[in-house]
Length: 79
Image (cartoon, rainbow, N blue to C red; front, top):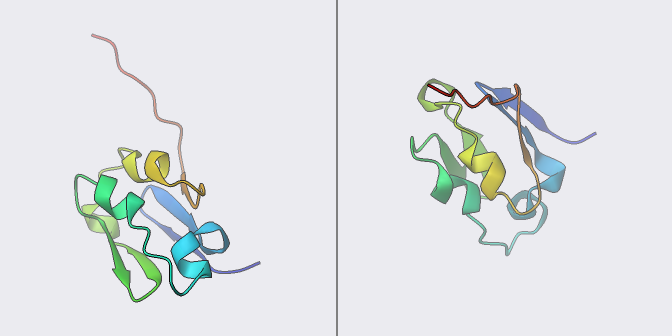
């Protein structure tokens, strides 16, 4: 239940996001970690700008509540 936003390479589980759950929360860990600036907040709501998302996973790794999930498994390429 709750809002789930699936765009690009990540899925938001809004019920886990501290900022979406608590009006006074100021967490921006995911947006701060994104090198492509593909995440932004409109008030308390997190918005994912899918065309800008590079699928690096930095946002999911930075979220202290695991509110963002990668829709695929990252694979390390070794040359």
